[in-house]
Image (cartoon, rainbow, N blue to C red; front, side):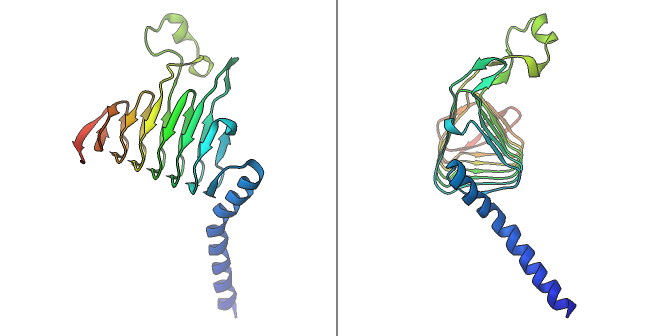
Length: 199
């Protein structure tokens, strides 16, 4: 008898685990209008009016997608565009101050950071800049990011402002990317370089 109950409990647990992201997506879509088919646990969106999500968007657990409209008494007009059929894994942070575009069909691994700005200037620093904590510095150095359709970003990738990746690029795990790549290529390293072209 106990085996029967344990079997039912396991099936019910499996169903809840599998259904939860879809149920969250339905709830969020009906309340906030977020166009997603699966939303992971503890995932948050900020600045939704400045974020465009394509159809069949799927996102994992503990992610943070933000379009920054205000920071330290400064106001911004960001544009974050994510295409159709984009899949984002767990623990990913996308932070947009100016412009970030992620094309259709991209696959983003886990623990990825994509940000088009920095906390304070990174060139010509003076003693005042260094004596101010980074969290209190104004956001600076905005530079657009374009990630073409069908790109695959491995786990732990960091994409910095000014990056442009052609459709079909593959970025190796744990790479730090700030480059322009106008042809499909394998990109990897710290800092990332073009390893080989795919076309």
